[in-house]
Length: 432
Image 1 (cartoon, one colour):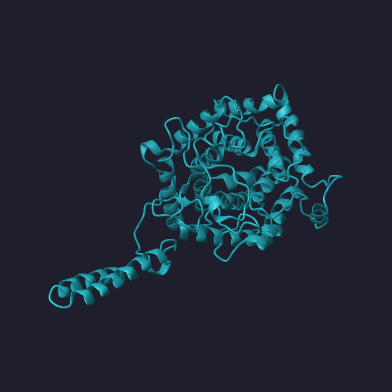
Image 2 (cartoon, rainbow, N blue to C red; image 1 turned 45 degrees about the vertical axis):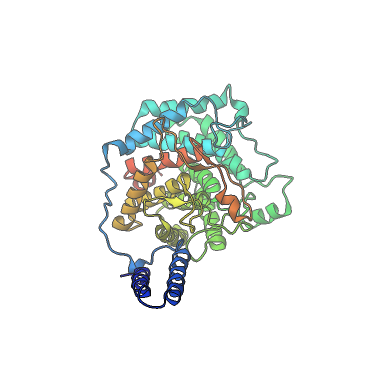
C-alpha cells in the first residue's frame, strides 16, 4: 500500500473515532493529513518514474506489424499525397496563415526530404517522381522562391538547409542541375561572407560554419545539408564538417539529464527544439562512414545520442506522447517533438543502437498515440507553432497548437519512412 493510501485509511479511522470522542481535535488532525496528502501529489506530478521501482510489464515492441488503420506505408502515402496537393507553400510551416513566404522555408524542406526518403523506401517510383516534379518548379516558374544566400535574418541556417533537397534528388536522378544548386548552399555554409560579424569570423577561423550560433535547431539544419552533400558527392569534407559541428554542440549544450536547453538564453527543455537534436544525431550516426578514422566522432555522438534517448524514455508520458516542455509531464502533449523522438527511437532500434524491447515498445506506443492526432485529411493536430527562443517559461506553454503545420507533417512522415525502411544504414554505406 502506498504512503498516500495509508494516510487515507488513517483519516477514515480518525473520522470514526471522532464520532465517539472530541470531534474538534480529531477533525484538526484529519484536515492536517489531507493537506499532507495533496502536498505529496503536487510535489511528484512532473517527476519521471524511478526506473528501479517501475513495475516490469511486458509491452509489445513489434515495429513490423501494426493494426490495419496504423500501417506505416498507408500513413506515409497519405502524408505525401497531402503535401503534394497543398495549394501553396507554407508560411514557416503554417498552411493556414494569411501571410505568404517569400522563399521556401525549412518546414517545407523537412517535408520534402521526408517525402523523398519515404517514396524511395517503398519503391513507389510514380509518387517519388511527383515529389521531384513539385521541386522542379523551383528551377522555372518558382525560381524566385529559392532562399537567399545573404538573408538579413539571423537564422541563416533555416535558409541554407533548402540545399538538402536538390542534393537528395541528385543521388537518384544524377542531373547536375540538382547538384550545382545544392552545393551552392552546402559550400556557402563554410564560405565566410564579406560582411560577417566578429563572432561569425571567430567560428570560421576555428573551422566551424560561420553560421554556428549554439541553438539546438542548428543540429538538423546544418548537419542535414552537409550530410546530403556528402551522400551526393562522396567528398568526405562534408561529413567531417557534419560530425565536428555535432560534437561541438554536444560538448557545449547537453545537460546531465541528456536533454538540451532551447538556447543559451532560454534554459527550457522545449519539445521540438530537442527533436532537432534527436533527429540530427540519428542522421549523423546513420550516415557516418564506417572507416575507423571516424570512430572518435562516432563514439562521442553515440554517447550523446544514448544519453538523450535514456532521458527521453524517462520523460515519456504513459500514452506514448511527450509534453511541450519535456520535463513538465503535465504540459500539453505536442506532436512534432513526439514524432521526432519516435523517429530517433525507431532508427536506433532498427540499427541495433538501442535495446529493441525497451525502446521498440516506447516507439510503437508513440506511433500509435500520434495517429490518434491525425485527421481524416492527414493533417496532424497539436503541432506547436514556429517558436523562437525566449527566456520565459510560460511563453512555451502558451504557444498555439496548430493542425496540419509542416513541422508535424514532416516529422510523422519521417516515422513512416523509418518504419518502412529496415536497411537504410547498410544501403547508405554500400552506395558510398
